[in-house]
Image (cartoon, rainbow, N blue to C red; front, top):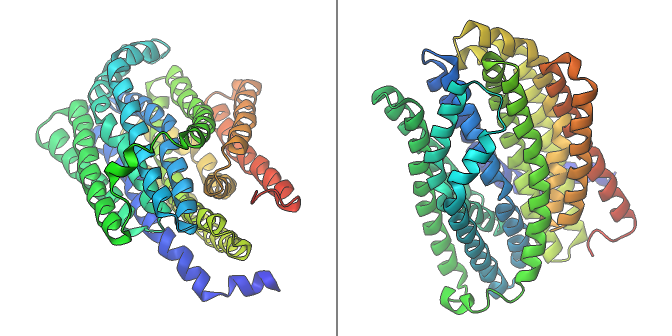
Length: 445
């Protein structure tokens, strides 16, 4: 009865949707960007352009996503500070996050050439694919300060229960990227270099807008002057670092699976890696769509924990789970009925289209399998429980590689079987941890 009353609570649904819908709308532009990249490059004369962009962008994504803990930790800590109404701590979270982001960016830029040479030496892709992949990576690397700074900006704004500013920030980044993609690749004929340069310019455009939004909110909330917080940035940094360490190790495992997916697919041939790139664009669509509700979960859970309000926490969990289920059912229907048409929008290379169609059923199953891990991630991020997330991801990653090698005779199907199993295990392990901690009253501790 209590669950039914919660699910019929209009105020709850409004609260969840006001946070989730802006993030879903903004996140949809991210896979849309990937689809435009793939569509623009995929209609060039050779498959190796698409394979090269897939390889190079995967390596950039791996590098930046490994540092995605900057957004997650910032969201959780900012939401708890906001819920506790601690203005000094809220400002301190921003100062600490930006300091770490710019520091990591400086290190990455100093070593990015060495990183590229080392990583691409492990690839079994053709020389053409590796050449264009390295070309893309070398240009995109210079977006690091903006890309990592944007993680902190997005996390901090979301933690203050402000979803509209992050929405416009992400939309601006991706719309700018799409427009410049078409201009540079098709208009100027810059091919892979044009796609990479468009992304660099877009990241800095988004950072400028994000800083403006933070400044406005800072003035409205009357937070302490930033100069006064800088001297306190080191104080309490150990909690920030510890949380980031655990989420980093979690992200390392996550990116190991996606990197293996791309590199192993490349070893099956240029057409296979191109087909996987098409389907991975759809997987990113699922991921970013679900992340909208995961972000809402992070903000709501963090605020409830900061305010020490258990009832608010219960309602947030139920509301986010309900709407996530609705979205995943719709995504499953779209991929099941329109998958072939969606593939055709991306590439007109017959071999790539046929191969992508063969592996499409794995993608149809993905939304309902994966929704649980995305939402549970949101819960644990909001609760700033990095250790539990790290342990869950480690177990799931072990299963991913075990499933692939046990079924390796299936070729590329083994990769997709491993990925579906990986997503399912993430949800199972986090659900088990949450259940045990909830029953023992240690989740809010």
